[in-house]
Image (cartoon, rainbow, N blue to C red; front, side, top):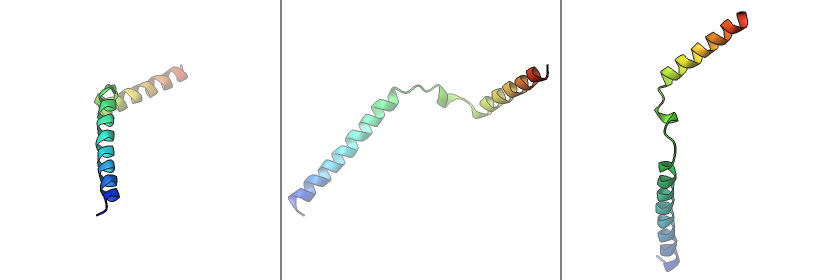
Length: 59
């Protein structure tokens, strides 16, 4: 294998490692409130809001 192919493989591997570390740092700063919501509770709240809006329109 030529020296340039070896250097290219090493550069690609280092680039993948660096990008994964950068992604971890970025995701550590993310707000996790939206991920912890229960989808069923969210759907119930949405349905209740729609029902309230329909009642308000009727009155």
